[in-house]
Amino acid sequence: QVQLEESGGGSVQAGGSLRLSCVASGRSVSGYNMGWFRQAPGKEREFVARINWNTGTTYYAASVKDRFTISRENTKTTVYLQMNGLKPEDTAVYYCNLRSAGILFSSASPAYGYWGQGTQVTVSS
Image (cartoon, rainbow, N blue to C red):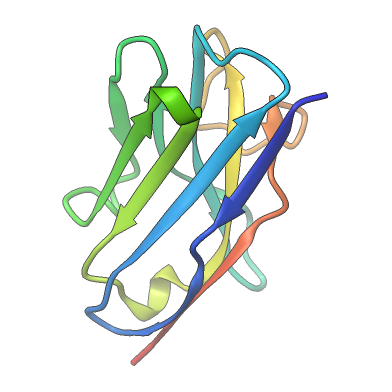
């Protein structure tokens, strides 16, 4: 059974940084994309960033590009999201997702791939 375990959330002031981690277990991630979505109160879940496990190719939402960096550590089957220059509008529950590279990653449909339980990020002004 596939499991995704997130960690690293917390509360910071605007301009601060946090690093989220997501560890995958239960299957090989070769050929898969892995990344992050977020959901703020009263809003729909939205794509944040993703990385292709084989090639390392990354893709970001426009709202986080140049502030967030996604990376992977192959030996630990772990994906990281380094978040710098955090803004109050980044406040949300952040979810890790693992899905086949053949599935559009920007779709936040819960039917696509495997999901973690989420980790809360709160940015105060």
